[in-house]
Image 1 (cartoon, rainbow, N blue to C red):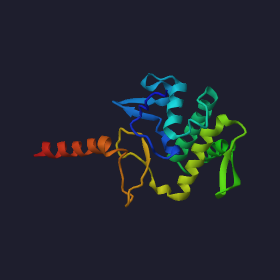
Image 2 (image 1 turned 60 degrees about the vertical axis):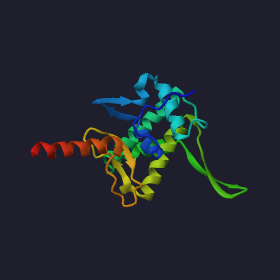
Image 3 (image 1 turned 135 degrees about the vertical axis):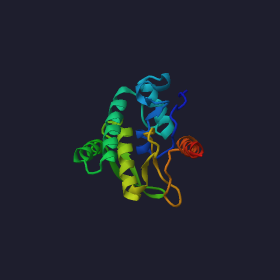
Image 4 (image 1 turned 180 degrees about the horizontal axis):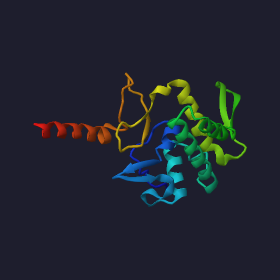
Length: 186
């Protein structure tokens, strides 16, 4: 049985969900792959694979974790500065470990990912997902507007104006802070 995912934001596209394996709680930076919530590094990987639906396809082992950390760093750098050529090179290096194979099934044309080394599967999948996000709506890839939050999300709101990772957490704190500031001025 896999442990409960301790992260405050889950369910984002895989590329952003991978970035959200690092978060801040009570002013402390936490990392799902570095012992957050008392989990070992590989247990944290198992939790992440389960939460993203990749657990049945890939193993939670040390090699997979090393490759996933490489992908997380590459994606983090690419999102921080899209003009950074070295970041793009890192993403490309992750993508070199897999490919899409076109197939024909009973239902019609299909595609499946293939990997020479399956340990690269989750890392490649996250990097490929990042390309899909960039191809569909790059302007909707957002960082939470809270100065103390590092979480990323894909804005699926109708008008594309979501600002917070969660209205229940960061959004509510911002509204409460503004209200407190207004009442203090009176």
